[in-house]
Image (cartoon, rainbow, N blue to C red):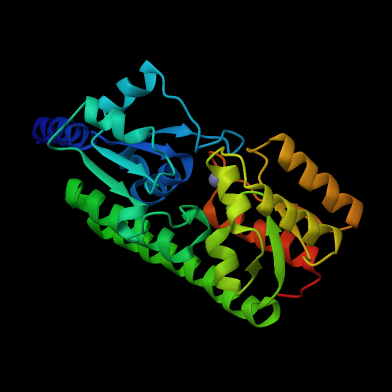
Length: 287
Ligand SMILES: [Zn+2]
C-alpha cells in the first residue's frame, strides 16, 4: 500500500512538473508582462524589453540578445500603432506558426496617425487583459478558472479608474493645457481637456522639427498664460522643448511630468492613480 502510494506520488510529481512548463511571454513594454504575471501567476515566464519609461520607445534600437529572447517566446505583447516599430522586424526575422502576437493598437482598431499612448486608456488596458486571459487559458486549460477570476478582479480595478475619470470630467472639462509630447492623450480626452499644441507634441514624438508657426503659437499661449498646465515627458528632450519648459517656468505655469508607461514592477493602477493625483494637484481640482 505504502509502495503504491509512493509510486502514485512519483507519478503526480512527474505529471505536475510536465504540466508546469510555463508559457513564455515576450513584452515590448514592461506593463504587459506585469499583466501576464498577474493573470497567469507561476504558469507564465516573462521577458520585458522596455523596463524604464526614461527610454524613448519611439526611437529604440534592438540588440541580438532581444532577438534571441523573442525567438524563444510563444506569446508576444506590444502596443503597436507605430509606438514600438522595432518589434515587427524582429518578428519577421523569426517567424513562428505557434506564436501569438497581441497588439493593443489592433485590439482597439487604432487608426493610422492616431495617438498610440494607450497606457493612459483604461478601455485599451481592459482589452489587452481580456485578450491575454483568453490566450493564456487556451494554452493552460487547467488554469482557466483561476485566470478568469484574476481577469475579473483586474477588470474591476480598471472600472475604478474609469469611474474616477468620469467624475473628474465634470470638474476639468474645457481646461486648456499644453503637452510637450502626446503622452497622456487618451486620459486628457477622457477628461475633456483641450490640448492647445497637438502638432508641436506630435513633432516631438517623431523627433521632427516642429513647424515655426506651431512653435510661435505655443510660445504665445505660454507667455499669455492661456494654458493652465504644461505636461512634459522625461524620456524626450530637445532644445525647442527646453525653451518651452523655460517659458512655462517664467510664466508661472505648473509643469507636470507624465512618463511613457509604468516601470517594470509597477502596477497600472498605482501608476494611473499617481498621474491623476498629480494632475488634480497641479490644476487645483478635487477629484
Ligand atoms: Zn511617447
